Length: 312
Image (tube, rainbow, N blue to C red; front, side, top):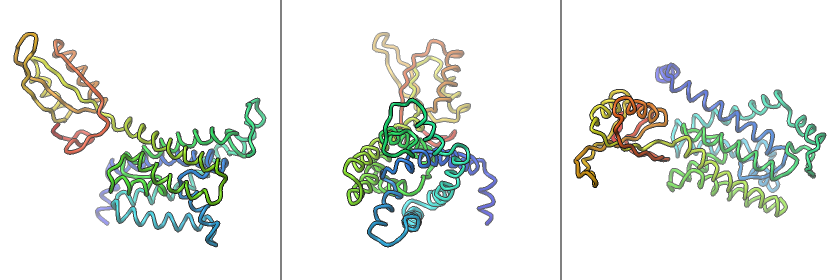
């Protein structure tokens, strides 16, 4: 109990609580506005439940509850208590957040506005917000991928398929986007039992795009700057990186090929904000420095965030 009370007093808990809520707000919008009205079966637990309910005499809602319960247990046991607890929270708020979106702007109202407009789109599904399964697919994938990337970045998930993807990611070390594609693709294939061929293909394409977009957003969220600096004032720069930015750095002896002058190169791995601050410091204190920088999307080892004392 003391550990729980202590956790509730930390900024990390409340920051991640807010991030999870915002991330699920995007996910709920994706499901409410684009997946449910379009009746697409993309690689989701809802889609799998629809398929299984055709062969097992259980309501779809009960089937979703059972499968999610099993997956949450697996998340707790195979991935970790933190991931499991966070995913329980996100799974519980999905339905209420969909109700919030309905209160703000009902999907039926958007569909009616679309049908009343001059949009040159014909559809066999008048409840569709976009009026075309491909447009519904694109909008759903983009919004869901944003939600997934936000949650994966803090060791959480939207539940369902994301749990399967996280398990695949942990035990095969595949990229999380590819893990989403594999898990979702397997689920999509079950739809061949009940859906027209073209609808299943749309679902498979959507699942593949979902994996690509998740990887893109994850890389954007995790992107760091590797900066290399050669300067006579390297000691000032080192002190700023270690003392002010609270980051580690490496020092390498280098020899100029043109001047044959021996100097010291500093290499550090920084966030975008820290990189901007360092560039401002160098501009004011070491204007003759030679600097190269590049993007890094994955970091392992002792580089901690935020403001860890890792060694590059």
